Image (tube, rainbow over all chains, first blue to last red; front, side, top):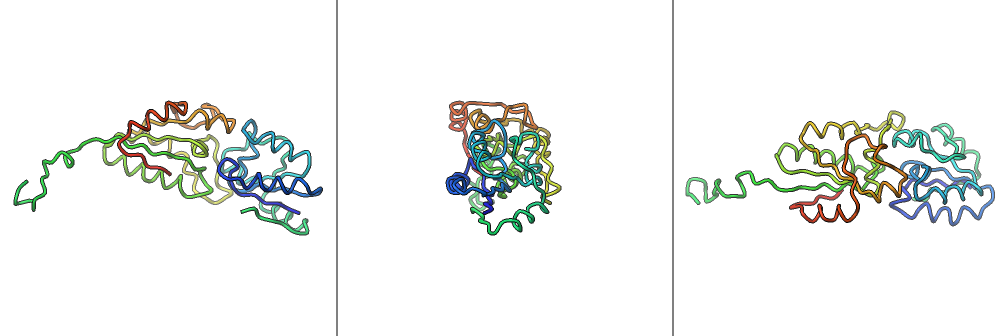
Length: 101
Length: 136
């Protein structure tokens, strides 16, 4: 399943809830978009949670949102960047998806 | 009070250019919601009224002034360069909460304007000295 998160992890518990559930599922994928891309940045409070997630599921972040927020040089290694076309591919590749609003 | 002004005294202290201390508190990331841009609009308007204006950036608000924002691909206006223009409107008191930077792995060098980095305690003091605090 593809899990999509769009809220800043500092302002909202959405990412925590998503990870709590999604990390139990082998083969799950997580896509960070909009303000959730802040979770992909190095040396912040969420770095260890993201590294833990990377050991269990695939993690992607939407490059246009990373770039808009000036996070392009701060992304944690192992998180794969996708553009809008890649976003569509991820949705198509997975049997289903959930947007954690 | 005078008859000719309908009872309104234009020499009254409130109407004669009292300068108040206004602080705008910015706590939201720049593009996920409209708050950051709206705050900036109000700050620029406030500059026209010759008041004592300061801005505080804390929580996700610190992301508003991070360097290197390129918004072409999300098709949204990049308003971050405007923070650099505030100096030209005599808005030079920009405060950033140290704890918020640290939680996000950011340092003063990652910011696109000159700011004063302050602890929560220092922010509390300066906030309590304001006449008006407007929160975004």
